[in-house]
Image (cartoon, rainbow, N blue to C red; front, side, top):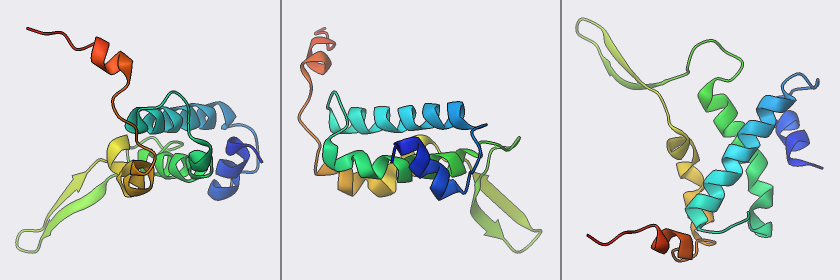
Length: 118
């Protein structure tokens, strides 16, 4: 089953109307994995995690909704104050970092060549 089909199952989507959006989210997820692990392609052992990460990103970013979702950051009782926090992709994916870390490589040559000495 392709990653997009797995994401659609996880989200309960039965039609093809959000396919382009889901492909973008999957691509962003794969880029995060490659950047985090310092690899040029998603390791085979991590391909199964892509749909779950993409699903979490879809939900966290509120795609399909006109408003950005946010988590409650703090609540005060006196004079009622509630603070909200919008999550970034790195925050959404942070729960996966322990699993990704096992596949993390050293710095890529492209990282080293882009560093300039002062």
